[in-house]
Amino acid sequence: MPEFSLIVVLVIALALIFDFTNGFHDTANAMATPIATGAMKPKVAVGVAAILNLVGAFLSTEVARTVSGGIIKEGDGGVLITPELIFAGLIGAIVWNLVTWLMGLPSSSSHALFGGLIGATVIGVGAQAVDYNVVAAKVILPALIAPLIAGIVALVATRLAYMITRRDVGKPDGRGGFRYAQIFSSSLVALAHGTNDAQKTMGVITLTLIAGGFQAVGSGPAFWVIAACALAIAIGTYTGGWRIIRTMGSGLTEIKPAQGFAAETSTAATILASSHLGFALSTTQVASGSVIGSGLGRRGSTIRWSMAGRIALGWAMTLPASAIMGAFAAGLALLGPIGIVLDMVIGTILIMALFRWSRRNRVTHNTLLNDIDDAGRVVEIKKTPRRARRSKRKKVSL
Amino acid sequence: MIDWIAFLIVSVASMFSAAVLVSLYSLGLRLLTTAGRIPLVEPHEFTGAITILPPKKAAKQLKRARKAAAANPLTPGLKRLALYAGYACFVLCAIAVLYGVYLIVPVLHG
Image (cartoon, rainbow over all chains, first blue to last red; front, side, top):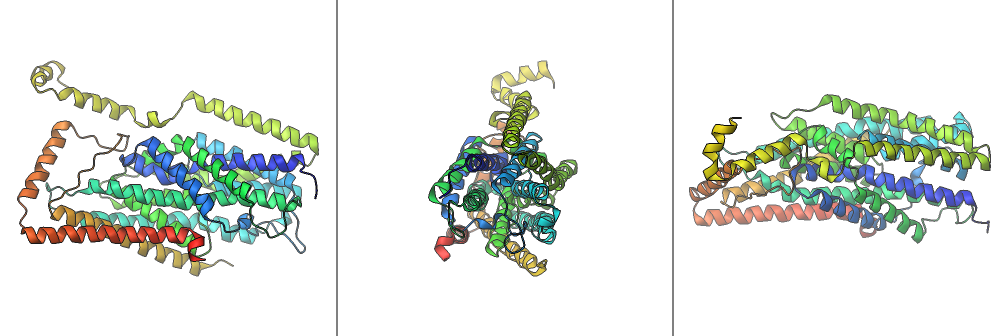
């Protein structure tokens, strides 16, 4: 039994940090729409999402070894990825996740992880170690198709929801009832997320443990790994990436309960169908596609295509950007122990700087209310007292 | 290399299941409304995405809902039928969601 080396401990710690960022990055996928329509209180919504992520991580015990998914050639004639390279890849992934969070962009955490690992491998082993065909087939193509499928499904679902509940003008249509349904549909998305995304970190940690000789080749994640990953992603989810929630909930289009329900159902259906049929689509991309689709499905709603463009740009940049950062970190890590210490220091400084930057304009569940609506509400409340109304109207005359 | 068939299957499967779920729930709501039990669910929190109704307008809507319920052309028996049919839709919807949970948890289906 080899000793528990420092690098293995470092990789495990970084993997858990990545899991945490993954959690708060992806809270929006499930909970942005119910928060936006007022189906759930923001704090309650992230709490539910956190619990379901925790439960979901325990529920699925399928071996998470597909994390490198054959992208990095292993075994015969291939290379063994070393803990140092995983370490470097994780730094790249974490930094990119924080950058996109700061910009409020919903970007795929798994793409960041893949990108970081690819970048680290290219520097550490060489460009021939990466199977670009697999990258194209398993990462890039699904990234183009996922939002498209989800968008079309959400568009049709929204049309259906409005068509079925349509009544004569002036008659109540009861569409507020979709708020109840949203609680369940968004919970389903959160549960699916827990079973998918916590697995990736478990896979990384297990891969490291196997590479370090602590665990038999081909064995599944140990219980403490599952528990630690589940906890990390749950805490991350509860922290709530409010910036991304704001983007998804009101940045792309105005969401009404029927649309929110249609979008969440489409997200859940698409994710479940794809993972059940053996390949995983990015939760983030599916959810963003659904929101846009539901916006297209309702008559009279507008989509802020500039925001959609920014998000798409973020997606396109995720893989190369985290690859470059992973490559940079790997270049340092290969210098030996000094390089790893240097990596740690630079990584910590970067993370601290990003958090510092985020303090400048904090976005919390309280700031989700935008100022205009707040003002509107105050004005409406002032109108309520009946007697004062007439005299006030004369004075204020808005 | 690229499995186009898989993408096609996923699109069809997700389209089908989402359409069925949304239709069932919408139909349930529609039937409840028809039965005179109009669900008025207030938002928990007012975020940027919600158009806020002034209290006067909200009260007007509630009044209109009551009036529509009173002026329902259906006989009491038909109303009850619509109500039960609506509930049946919700139950079917719940079953579909449970099936989704069943799909998520690999322990349940091996």
